[in-house]
Amino acid sequence: MPRVQDFDVLGWWKLNNTKFPTLSKMAADILAIPISSVRPDAVFNTESGKIDGCQSSLRPVTLEALICARDWLRSES
Image 1 (cartoon, rainbow, N blue to C red):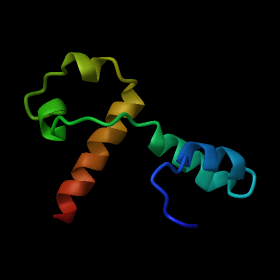
Image 2 (cartoon, helix red, strand yellow):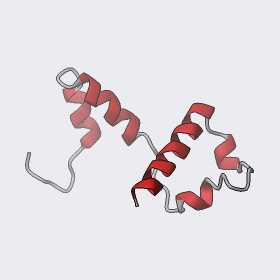
Image 3 (cartoon, rainbow, N blue to C red):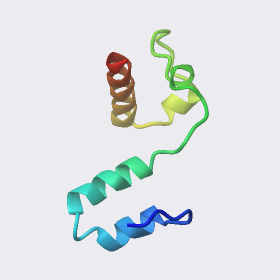
Image 4 (cartoon, rainbow, N blue to C red):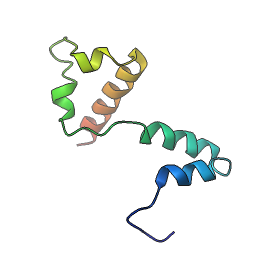
């Protein structure tokens, strides 16, 4: 596929979800994560044992997944 500036990745997955059903679901999960300019450590400081307003609005399974992802990323570096 040619690289173009205004490529609609969500539209592409919507059109190709029957061709790639598993990848389509994974892409929907990943692309649904909001972008943040705040450092993950600043938002998800689990060391203090306190949960801020952003964390408390997340479902427990989502918060657990984010904490696991953070730990995996830390272990790679």
